Amino acid sequence: MSDLTRRGLPSQFAYVIISTIQIIPQMQAKAQTIIAAQRSRGLETEGSIFKRIGALVPLVGPLVFGSLVEVEERAIAIEARGFTSTRKKTSLREIRDSGLDKIFRAVLVLIVLAIIALKIWTH
Image 1 (tube, one colour):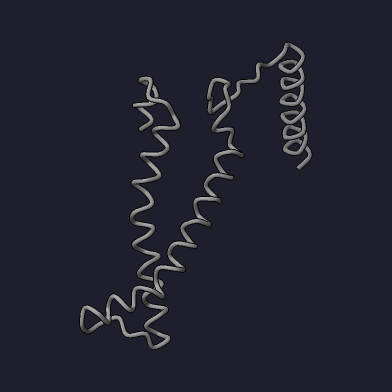
Image 2: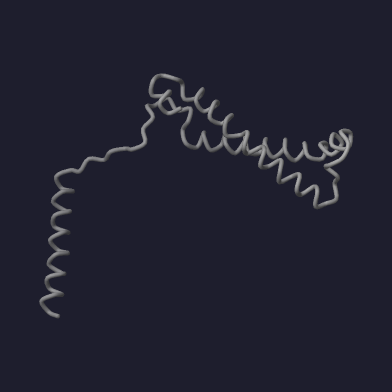
């Protein structure tokens, strides 16, 4: 998807595709967890087709509500990351060193080397 966005695919469209692909295994895992929890409470999930359909009703509620909570959390996360920002997307903001920064760094390196030499000399 990142290659497609570099080639001009809108990032919103790429996100929809990726999130759809990612949500299927998450929903399956959550459904298995809910089924195991309901079985531990004595719900019969095996037997005739009518028993299995009746057992789905208590499973659907937690699955749907849990999914809605996850969608809301994702929406908050992508907004916090500036997903809909109109500025150019970057992963790194380069901060250039000024001449004063370079001098200060060189002085600090010299001080550290002097301290190490002094420690070695006096030991």
